[in-house]
Image (cartoon, rainbow, N blue to C red; front, side, top):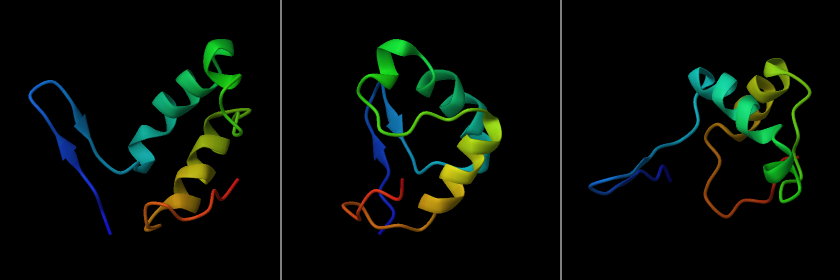
Length: 64
């Protein structure tokens, strides 16, 4: 199931390869990494993570 959420101020969509740089940028921030189990070492790690979650259903176990 693909879920997209749209409100007047927010749009949530599934991750795509185009999101790799943004994912890498925020997931490496110390204030974010303390709450996350995936901290990419580079954009290539973010791309691999995105590829691993493509097509997964919401609620599926964490791939990383």
